[in-house]
Image (tube, rainbow, N blue to C red; front, side):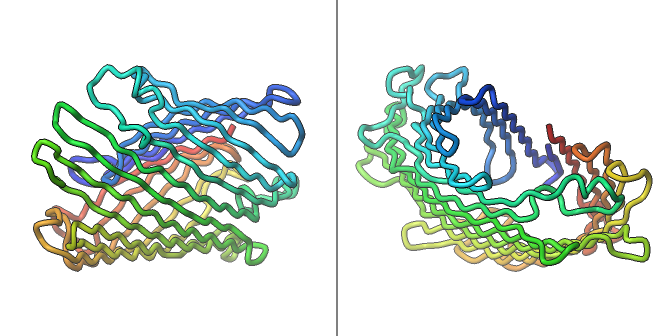
Length: 356
């Protein structure tokens, strides 16, 4: 669970939970919860899944996202392949809002055959660490899997959504792909790389006026790199994390476009303080900056979008470690460009992480 101030009137929140239980040799239950609120999205998803394994390497899945309004319910089918113990491939097909056509308490509806369907695959390959060796020392070791690779692709089919009360039809589709790689460079250094791209097409038709009312094609790309070095310093109780994120966004509006380019480098230095072993707290000092460039007609950009801006921030983080599987972080940020003004305080954030 994470939260943080992103403006004078808004909080960013991110809440995730995942529960998994092998009920028997053949059956497995999974539960997922995800709530994300920021300037890009405000979504909540609760997914229940049952898997049946007729053989060790193959699982058959039925999953759904139930809610109070049946028009918003999703249901899906998936195949889960496990060619080896540490490689899982999931191929899925989700029928989005599958009951909207017949169980709708509103007048909007989908125009068949263009009903929403999400298809794709997610693959994960990993190598587990030796947890016994980690418990023999007070040193900080690489968390989770030492090696991890994830690849994903998704296609949201073309959908035509009719709103008769407004005399409008909303037409959209989306494509998405991502790669995520974690690997050790040596005994105390870890590299993380994430690449993500997606495209969303939107079109709004006003059939009362007999024409196109609006629409856009949005392209996004992200590249995140991070290196973490552990067990540094004279007492081997320091850690250093540094990296950068590069983001590119483009919106095309019938020949005119808006472009955003953002680069965010960061450096974090941490030192262990009170406690021993996995219960040792940490103080972390951080510096990060963000360079943003906005391009395009002013009429298509919001008031926060600047043509070019560079921000510098100093961050102070305290991490409470309750056990090897539970921690809580508090973060405070200062705007280095506004030192001595009423805008010096940049904001704060918190994060709670518990593994079951």
